[in-house]
Amino acid sequence: MSFIAGVADLAREGLASLRRRGGAWSCGVVGQKLGVAGGYGMLALSTAFLLTSSDATVRAADCGNVAGPGLDWSGCSKSNIMLQNSDLKGANLFGAHFDSTDLSDTNLTSANLEKATLVRAWVKNVHADGANFKRIEAYRSDFSNVSANGASFANAELQRAVFRGAQLVNADFQKAELGRADFSKANLTGVNFSFANLSRAGLSGAVMQGPVSFSGAFMYLTRIEGLDLSNATGLQQAQLNLACGDKDTKLPSFLKAPTGWPCPPDDPDDKD
Image 1 (cartoon, rainbow, N blue to C red):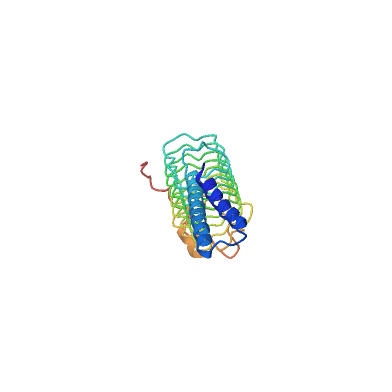
Image 2: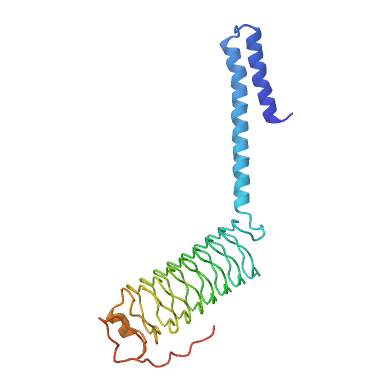
């Protein structure tokens, strides 16, 4: 007989005895019987609750699950492995570790990667529209040809990350660290670079078919040669004076090209 079944039998016994005696049981006996039953019942319920909670915790933290839509790998370590072509649509990857992991061609649509680490990871050709990349660490990671329309990279650490050919329509890069990031040939229409660090970032060759916000962005030696910035918002003369454009850079009517344009080629950088 199970523990819970025994408690139930004890309770039934007390009620049956009470009926046999026409309700004549003394308060002490009734209280003793039902008190024991009640005590066991509470203990059983508490134990069951703890076991259920424990099982739920184990399931949520089970990092051994095979990649699949909607899974929970929050806080899991998935570094230095091959996950290309995986389907992680809508997955909870909060705080997960993907350093040096190959996520190429993976479906990350609407996935939550907030505070995840993707240092030197391969995120090429990934489908990540609407994904949450807030506060990720992804130094030197390759996001080439990623589709991350409407995704958020706010407060992300993306120094030297590569976004060549990426689709980033309406993506949010507020306060992101983008030093030396490469956005060549990326679609940046509607992107928010407000208060981002774009020092030495390469935007030349990017597509901007609508407003792009540069409000408060740090643009020291940012490469904007040939860009059409005529619809840019938040852009100030002081930012342009630090940036690197050329005669083909189109500016809002109230701004003018600095006399120092074009800039010399960027200094060679180490490969480490």
